[in-house]
Amino acid sequence: MKYYGQACGIARALDVVGERWSLLLVRELTLGPRRYRDLATGLPGIPSNVLAGRLKDLQAAGVVTRRTLPAPTDVTVYELTDAGRALQPALNELLDWGRESFFLGSDAGKLTVRRGPAPDGDAVVTMPAGTLYSLMTGQTTVTGAVRHSTVDGDTEIARRALEPLAAAALTKPAPAI
Amino acid sequence: MKYYGQACGIARALDVVGERWSLLLVRELTLGPRRYRDLATGLPGIPSNVLAGRLKDLQAAGVVTRRTLPAPTDVTVYELTDAGRALQPALNELLDWGRESFFLGSDAGKLTVRRGPAPDGDAVVTMPAGTLYSLMTGQTTVTGAVRHSTVDGDTEIARRALEPLAAAALTKPAPAI
DNA sequence: CCGCATCCCCAAAGATACTG
DNA sequence: CAGTATCTTTGGGGATGCGG
Image (cartoon, rainbow over all chains, first blue to last red; front, side, top):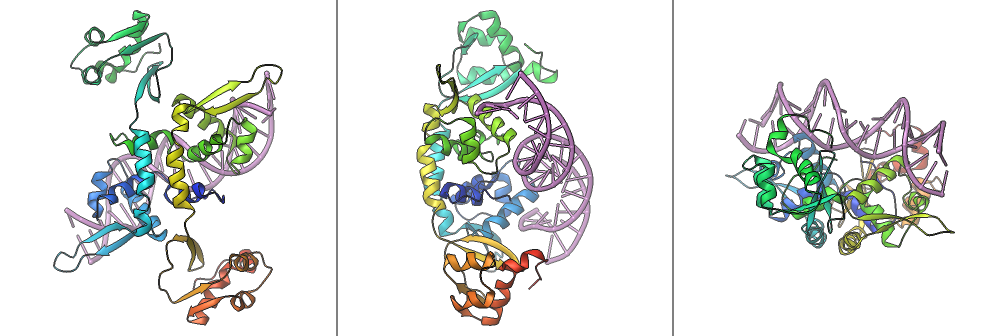
């Protein structure tokens, strides 16, 4: 890893747990001791070598320990050290921040997640999360989704912005709008 | 950026500010509005294109805004949004965690930073930070450093462990010990 | 199986030069 | 000064292999 090399405590903390997957790995271990396989399934998408590498790094940093349970189980588990458990308050704050409201932006067929109140735009479409889900999974169409939405601004622009989000659009390249 | 794609708030938070440099950039902006150049100097080592990219990402995420001050200053500054300022508690917790005590480990000529109390080993050398600095900058030798240290364990092993840390060792490959 | 290690590939970071 | 352009290097993503 490349270190920030700053005296700041935040930088030093990120030197230890700032790499991709590291904090999520700690999150998994706050639930208790876990086996390699448990961690792999709890972190969908993490490559096997990255998981192994992170576990090594966090052990070297004194955040995680590896232990083999006594016979007859004879299972190797990973668990947090005291220093690792001390990360809990930071995780809680990140959790609080991360679950605040957010909104989806559609720009030129590219879907982005943004935080805070929705800014003014050509059109703002507000719909229940379930309606968005139905739209994206093909259970409803753009027309159907709009019926369950409130549109603030140009309705035609709103429809064109929603098109690339519909499930049908997933099989063909999104048109630039 | 590759998103974690998990419903967990921590994962969503890291989707927004989990990339390298992002949280340190937010830290800089908690001090108040800053110009591009201020940020670059406050984040030593950040490549210019990465800084520009992070600023774009954080603006898109609604964490940072860009503003041009009115004439005659006519200076563009970056500052945190309300959502960005809401990261302060998380930064404080990371700061608390990051400035806790840590120790250096020397293993096969490789220097590592570890957290928590120093574990038992073949030898544990305790010295003032200034002595370590002198050793690594060549202002003192291993022998001189040991004189200002307390050694718990095998003294010869301690000396061999310190050798690769001395400034003189930086010009030649560290021997495997 | 479970717990990794190895390989290849590509996207992103690092470094530096350059421009309006 | 505030970025963009370009090139090199690193490290993550994905698949697969392998020993206990």
